[in-house]
Image 1 (cartoon, rainbow, N blue to C red):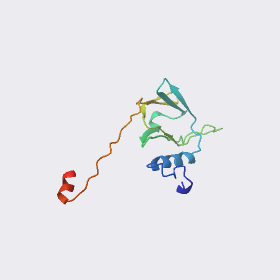
Image 2: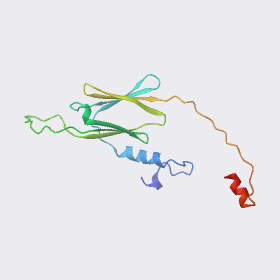
Image 3: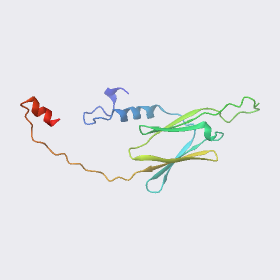
Image 4: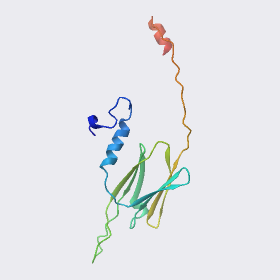
Length: 149
């Protein structure tokens, strides 16, 4: 993403480089396969459900890195099959979701061709931190500098 056209170009947004890269990554992803649902479960829970007909549990991997949940799938090709009509796709996929801070993956289940990934938002009250303003320190000798360290 060009920094000059970035939403985060303002000097008021300090340290949002990683978030900016995630937004850039998300904006490039347009693939709708496999289809999925995201539903709210209770007050703090979420569930992502992916429709993975034809996949087996061993064909799917799930990873979480830097708040990015990535699901990968790759089916084994059935080379012996002779199709009269081949309408079910045998293809690999990568589907990524960016999770907000405080959202954790509880577990994943694969039932009847549906992959369910259960998430929970950890309910933390906003913490207000007061920053004390220290008295100025004048360093006159190297020994005083070492004492501070």
